[in-house]
Length: 192
Image 1 (cartoon, rainbow, N blue to C red):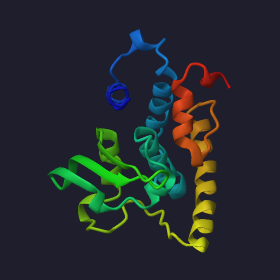
Image 2: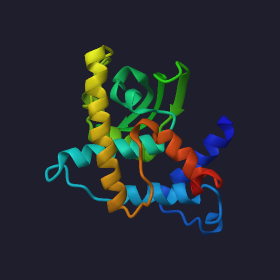
Image 3: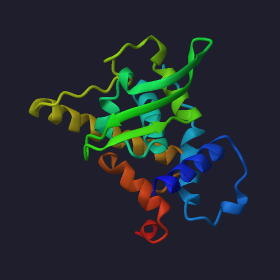
Image 4: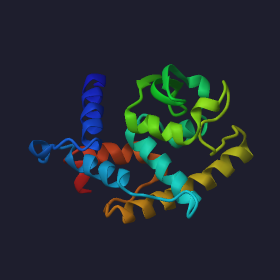
C-alpha cells in the first residue's frame, strides 16, 4: 500500500509541476489531481486576506500530505523535520517524522517541492526545536480541544470558500480531509 501511495504522490508532484497527464485523464486519481492543481493555482494575498492565505497553505499542505490531520498540522514543529538541505537561506529538501494524533502510528515522509515552499512561507529556517511551524496552536486539554475544534470549523469554512474559488464541486470537512482524498480517488465512493 505504501508503494502505491508513493507512486500517487510522485504523479501528483509531476502534475503540480505542469507535466501533461492527458493519458491519465481517465485514471481513478484524475479528479483529485485536478482539485489539487486548481487549488495550487489560486493566488491569495496574505496582506489582503491573511486568514484565507493561511487556510490556502494549510489546505495545500494537507492535500499534499494526506496522512496528516489538522491536529498533526497544528502540532507540527521543527524537530519533526530532518534530512534537510538549504540553499540561499531557504529549505530545499526535507523529510518529516511524526506520530499520528489519530492512531499513534509513526509516519515518515519525504516532502515534495510544493510542501517545502509552504514551509518556507512560514520561515522554517529561523525556527528551532519545539517551535511550531504553523501558527494554529493546539493545547491537549479540554479547553484547548474546544478551542481547536472552533478553529477547525473556521478553517473548514475557509477550505470550502477556497474550493468554490477554484471551481471545485466537493465539500471539504476538515476533520476528514484524508477521507475526502480517498473518496476523490475511489471511483465508487466519488459518486456519493
